[in-house]
Image (cartoon, rainbow, N blue to C red; front, side, top):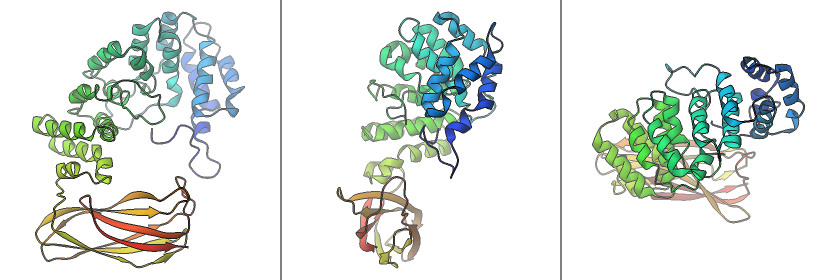
Length: 379
């Protein structure tokens, strides 16, 4: 999932929640559940539509679960059996990436938490196992980790070896300490590392991307643990070298932005690289909405690799703030200057922060070390 759960996005008139939940998608759900004796698909659709318009994306899912459960057996074991009987075919196991499933198939996860968490743990976990092969149950495994940590971890350890890559991905994604938009988990964030030890050698990018994102989460709270794990995995050699390199780069992306020396060294960028930097700002005065243009000239005393980033320092009423941007990864030869030019648009309508007029700063960092800085005036 790449967007916030209530994001509208897509330009004027676009509504993500309306694209995901509408008469057509509700009809699809009704047809799937028509295999259940006595299920009234028309009633289900009408019930859902009676309140859908006023609800956000996740609220719609909860309401749809209400409407569905009204026509299911009240006892959870029988409810779970009905939900499984109505499930569509599992997602194509021949695909290896990006097959997230449809949001409408999140309903078994919601009902597993509601009706199975306390008194039917094992049956509820069985339901999540089957449901995640249709739509990721990453949100819904987390209440079980909070309520039944040891028992749920035991399941996840077995699932890490499952033949279905959606099940394996759930093991990593569901235990992420900072999974976007999901319920927090009380589990020690270092405990799932033993699961990642199993999953990092997976041959499916959908799984290894989750492993890398999971490590990136941990890098914000225990960076040494991440560096140690990545080094250990490299030494083991169980993962393809190119994929291991991708995992490492993706897992360390936040640490690299922070300029952490160990992370950069693991990627082959030395903080002591003999690089000099000259920064030239071509637009010393910029209006909001216009483009800041600058050039960076790099010179090296010997051949080396350089990861070049830049930080913008913004003036804000509550105090200054900074944001790091990627420029380029380059290989430098001794005595051969390299010029990098950049045009950075200073959006007047940025959704994450508001630009304010005044003197702002630009800093160039090479391999995590500040090498040059200059100021510009935002009008």
